[in-house]
Amino acid sequence: MLLTGSEIIMQCLLEQKVDTIFGYPGGAVLNIYDALYKCPEIRHVLTAHEQGAAHAADGYARSTGRVGVCLATSGPGATNLVTGIATAYMDSVPVVAITGNVTTPQLGLDSFQEVDITGVTMPVTKHNFLVRRVEDLAGIIREAFRIAQSGRKGPVLIDVPKDITAQKCEYTPESPEPIEAPELPPEEWMERATEMIRESKRPFIYAGGGIIASEGESALAAFAEKVDAPVSCSLMCQGGYDQENPRYVGMLGMHGTKTASNCIRDCDLLIAVGTRFSDRVTCDTGSFARNCRILHIDIDPAEFNKNVDVSVRLKGDAGAIMKELTRRLSDQHHAEWMGHIGAWKTEFPLTQTAPDPDGVTPKEVFETLYSLTGGNMILSTEVGQHQMWAAEYFTFRRPRQFITSGGLGTMGFGLGAAIGAQLGNPDTIVVNAAGDGSFHMNCNELSTMARYNIPVIELVFNNGVLGMVRQWQRLFYGKRFSQTTLQKKTNYELLAEGYGVKALTIRTKADIEPVLKKAIDLGEPVLVNCLIDKDMNVLPMVPGGSCVEEPMLSMDC
Image 1 (spheres, one colour):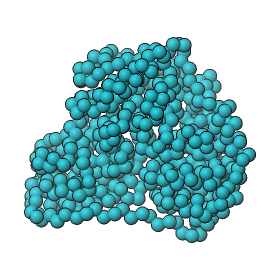
Image 2: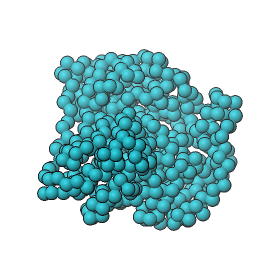
Image 3: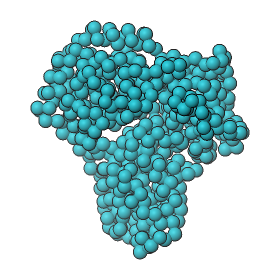
């Protein structure tokens, strides 16, 4: 059939089972928006800002496992997507961003609202495309979705000049090609890995975001039982292992638990699965895992020996490799080692107290959220202290229920991501935890929540400071709190109501349960202003460049 480029875009999106797009219109994408107007099968969500659209597509993808899609016009519209694209890239999230551009004859002439967006995004996409012929458009879109979902997942950008969206060519429908699963590693390497595990007396499993990307949570659970080992999950793998399981020891790294740091100190084999050994995990790479051998399982060979030298590396799908290792192994038994784990968990629990006995602690807030929902909710976050408190104190039982910016650490990410997660999971409670610093970055997306009646609970931990930066200033900069005391005069309740969002406030410990219960029961967009002390800190903490085995357990160290 003969279709315009814009109509081809719609048909290709329908081929890929896309049901939601997040975006913002402009001159270079008018033809696309006209085609979208005639395509009721695809829901378009108009965000307040293109960055919010990118984060919403990201949150949709992380929470559903499907590809998120965002759309923006040329120039500033396209560049406003870049932070969101980079966020998805660092955390290996499948997103397809479609941008408009000036007409092909105007490219390279510094035309109005022209930006070389493929050049700009080259370092933060798996691949990007500039479409120069309408005949190539359908193939490029199909290839973009394949690239976004295959191997190590990630964002892909398609830049479409305006004249391409108006030109016509023949379109032939196609079904998406199945994503090919990677092959298992060579037999020699599989046998070496199996033998390492058999020889180990004190194995320790460290799981990263690759577990969730590969849908390998069941394989991880079975593998941990077979190996008889404790399990730690990275920030990106929260929920990839049931945290009610006694094998779970918490996060490892800068804000990991003392039990996890003891595990890395005393284990004789570290089995690292679907992780890239971020500096936030290793801290001082020279002393990281210095007393053990390392088995590294990952889909991306570029991560092998990049940050940490390993003994054996297995390239491939994390879930498939663990299933194969589990099949090869007989039941391992490490009663003495697991006894140490249980003792450490009892000796070093995560605790938190407020300076005021009636004051609110984030620990109580997240534990109450868990109690009220039975853990059946999605929790997104911005970046900062509240992000670490969420990872420490909420109990994640399943994958895709923790949505956070790990690699890039993007303040302003969470609210857009929560909107995407809620639209992708309409029957699930979605809460976005924010600090008051992050909240001000993208609070305009409250208007998106109100317009579409998206029942996200925006939970703002309001301490009047940039808490994480201030914590570092307190410890390492002689309490010189340069520009981290916000002194904003924002009235959160009036601001929320001005956007058309219900507002509630938590002032004391006694308010926590009734206010959170009311927010949940309302079933509509709600902002909860949660007042906490400015000196609440994130602990444990490993100072930058220090050994991960020696976390600070108090601010008096």
